Length: 66
Image: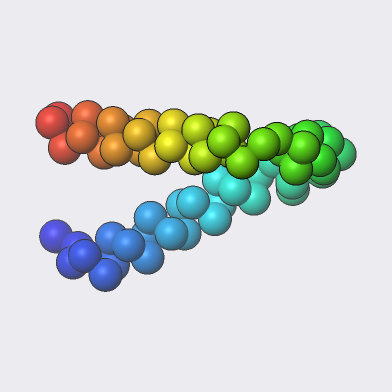
């Protein structure tokens, strides 16, 4: 079984891979999306961040349950 440090490094690597897929394959879509994100209000960005965190926790809890 992997220790916590190894698991963290693996998780970080997976996040970097997933975050890099869209700019690698569709850079113009990524730029347009990024441009739109910069026009959002702080509250809207916080809500998006909150939903990302909650979704991640739900996925981790679901994986832990199985």
